[in-house]
Length: 189
View: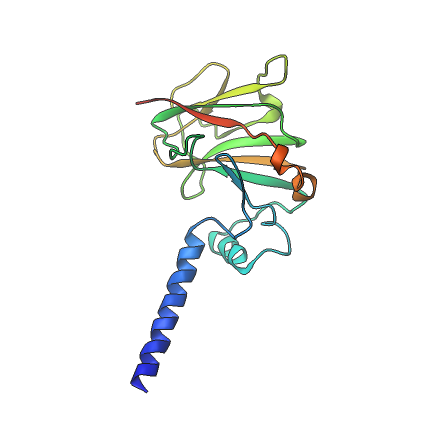
């Protein structure tokens, strides 16, 4: 009987530990990776898995609906090095298949990263572009000419790229051809 009690408590402890570990990482199992960017196309839908549902509930998130848009998150640059606000980054790309999109820097806890400019993101409508429609965004602590995304003092951050009115149904077959901005690390201080 004593052995049964030990086994039950061990199983319960292991189950709780595995669940806590699963909820601390990225939500769900159906992620799509494109270079350094990751998205969860079903996160805002009714058919999400229990781990995604629990991650949303525990974080207090309100994801976009499946047909409202997509969120892409980058925690590393194109070479796989973790993003660090002590470094500057060059994001380069071309127009994305969305009505409008935004790019913002967030602290690891999900709050906007405070910065000297009190500006937390950029929108596709306000970007300077070349004649071909391409854009370059400089993400750095210090002000930069052109499209500058200010970074704060907290070295740990991630980038969030939101495509509005570009739902999973629109892009589900186009992921292979979808070209998201590259993230190149420049000088570090």
